[in-house]
Length: 277
Image (cartoon, rainbow, N blue to C red; front, side, top):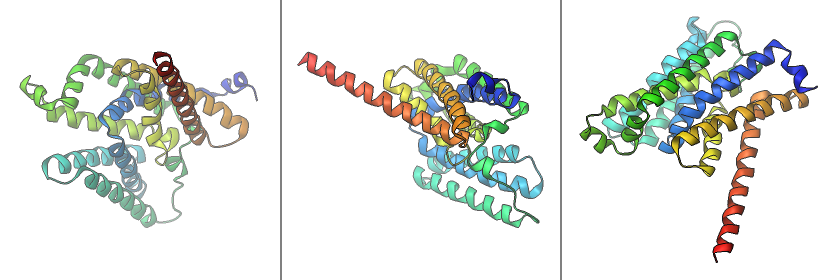
């Protein structure tokens, strides 16, 4: 099947648009996650979102909306326990990670009748993404672009030197909780892309690849967006040709790109050391 033949299908056009806006949102938030070393926190929030999905199915709510609320509360809970209650951060993350998954599974099995199909939420299926999903991702991308354009320096000050930021009158705690909310919202709106199980990868792998080539935050964001989107296109096309799940192949493509890039960077550095020697 030719790539241009696939583009003619509306579902594939939706998948491309969803990939673009998800790459923008994940590129921005994921770069923040990587430089702040919050990968484990993002994993905890991601898996905790299953609790909201399970409650949504049980009570008849929109699963994405209930997952978003549950994820935001989990993110706030992790931040509150680790910063205010003296609980180790990894312990707080592990607690909410397990609690969310346990609640989700309980409510799913308590629902009368047949258990809902969770494969799209666990493993993703971007080919089923709707125009409404795309609209939400587009709005999120625009909000994140505006926030980091207007307040990027303040966010980075609060992240890396909170004491200095407080002396400058910056609301450090408000910034931290706002960023945690941004992480939670980005995670939930991207679930349809690759699913809960693999979502951590699109928030970290393109950003890690970009970080191999630059340490500048803005350049890292732009490069990770480009890498993420190109990997989505390649993953979508290859999954259609090979008839494998699209989300899995998107992650596989991103990791292959990271490994190749890392090998090339190490090779260049090794040659440079030999020249200098």
